[in-house]
Length: 75
Image (cartoon, rainbow, N blue to C red; front, side):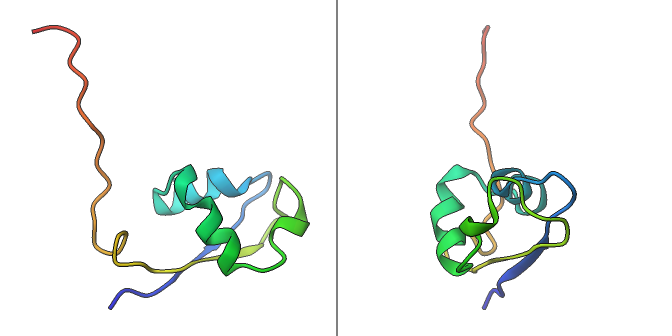
């Protein structure tokens, strides 16, 4: 069973940057994270230094390695 992650904002962090840097999550996870953190949206676009953001665990994310499609320009 996977546990929720606790991320801490650094100076000048926006939520999407924090999620990408610390958890490897993209924009499709923003709504789920905002739902798990009531009042987070009220803090504004730049999170105050030290803001703790909870990233809830899901079976789709837990244990799944981050992958990217390979784009080959030439044969």
